[in-house]
Length: 133
Image (cartoon, rainbow, N blue to C red; front, side, top):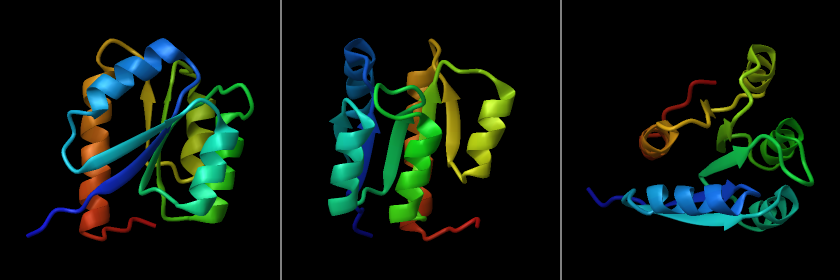
């Protein structure tokens, strides 16, 4: 079976974290990752050419993650959104889950490997057209 190439958009305003994420994500086969420094640029690109997966920091200079997710889902309700943030407030995470995010990852020492696996699972589910809604 021919494997698909999946588009992943990643928005993170911290250059050091972006570099670490870039190193981790380039190891995933069949995934093309585009990085953005703010939500505005991401939304502009997403509205022109939606990606399969969006990985978003919760706190961006121009958007709060919840508003960004709302805007992404308005454009394409099937996009798999993964939030990666240092925010550990259970109420915030529950609100994000109500917005139909795919996963929430707390930034930590082990989060890069977990993020790789999460993206791989999301792409597998997309490829096999699983829908949990």
